[in-house]
Image (cartoon, rainbow, N blue to C red):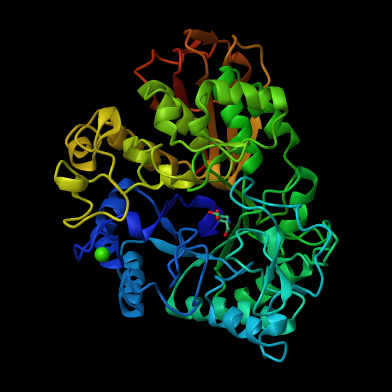
Amino acid sequence: MSDRWYKKAVVYCLDIDTFADANGDGIGDIRGLIGRLDYLARLGVTCLWLNPIHPSPDRDDGYDVADFYNVDPRFGTLGDFAELLHQANSLGIKVVIDLVVNHTSDQHPWFQSARSSPDSPYRNWYVWSESAPADRHQGMVFPGEQGETWSYDRTAKAWYYHRFYKFQPDLNIKNPQVRDEIKRICAFWIQLGVAGFRMDAVPFIIEETEPGNPDSPKDLDFLTDLRQYLQWRRGDVVLLAEANVEPDQLVKFFGDAGGSNSRIHMLFDFMLNTKLMLALARQDPEPIIEALRETPKLPAGGQWATFLRNHDEVDLSRLTADQRAQAFEVFGPSPEMQLYGRGIRRRLAPMLGNDRRWIELAYSLQFSLRGTPVLRYGEEIGMGDDLALEGRDAIRTPMQWSHLDHGGFTSGTPVRPVIAEGEFGYHRVNVTEQRHDPKSLLSWFERMIRTLREAPEIGAGTCTHIDVPVPEGVLVHRADDVTGTMLFLHNLCTKDAVVDLSSVYSEAESPNDVLADREYPDLGKFAEVPVAGHGYRWIRLRRCS
Ligand code: NOJ
Ligand code: CA
């Protein structure tokens, strides 16, 4: 059995400032999170990914860091953070933090020093150009919110590069001092006890930016170097990276030409995310089958991290224009639901019309397909979004714990309004209510996650589409490892179906449904296996002792 923890992990992603407020100032904090660790343990998650925790002017929800060696005082102290690590550890939960080192905040003392004089020891920590670079209106990540990637700084009397917002100057990876500092930052947090890092914007971190060259070279070997360094500090440290690049580029982020997993352990599977969305919109599994077929083979040790929703918009940019239009039509038809011309700023429950069966189907798909599942806070109770808020804030509203004021998130004035009205308001959607109801979405998530943890084949094994004739809308796949085999049926459309799976019957040893949308009749010889409209079945086919 694989002993790599990240292959069997269930990752839960949260932003401290909107999770739970302990001191009543309206901002979620570390002590609030500590108080909810029991909840997370019961849910069955084994690893937390915390969105940025550092001091920050907070103009990009913490992704604009002003000090890499501290926690935002609004969240607590380093002492509170060490306590969080201790308490989480005693419940068997690992903690991964965001590592945002492509850029800093423009308020970071390094940038303040760098801009103040060409002789500053930090000048060369950033990327400068004496003249206006010809490519300054190219490569923007946030079209509409960001006009350019090079801005003129009057104090510095030079242009500086920023792949993201203007207040996020890029660090200069060509500078060995910057490379050393990134390692030092990681080493510091490892020393405190974090289990790894969610590396932000990796393709941009390794970009050796040349003014005027919109396609500057990338130094992937920095990732090898960083991995080696970290692995020595903590053997089971994990790098989970955001690298939304062309599919043919992906493998390089996992390892170098030697074919081993010498760089990033886990990459978010953006391609599967997009194809899953398209498949759900079309009620047709073909895009998922295509994704499984086209996914590059990973070096041993490499792993996908799957997700349906995260703290950003659903990015549909890798679909064709027609496919994108189709996904928009079903999931984000009005302009206020869309963002940057490529994405949807909604949570999953509202995207799926708050249809409980459809939501279960979608998460059953994500959690049963290959890789390590990542779940965003609030999705387990089916939270909604607040389109009255700006941009991505729509999907960053506080966690809804109970019927109490502000959904029990705070006794003060919340940092962002808690959703109070309508079908997603906290009176109707909250943890306490769902805790009491064995039929709630929360109870379903607990059951589903527990089942996943009994099926290590999913995370550690091989995922294959079973190519047999099936009724429209049905996906059949399997997960195999030395521990055994799991078989999965998902019906993406609303019509009930019956599938002939006699071809796999010979492999079955006391097969049984370990999770399903309802009670199904005995499997017999697999000649007629029913799966209801929007239904799913997780069947343990055999177990190797
Ligand atoms: C990617 C993060 O997911 C996003 O939220 C952030 O705005 C950018 N990186 C910039 O750090
Ligand atoms: Ca607080």
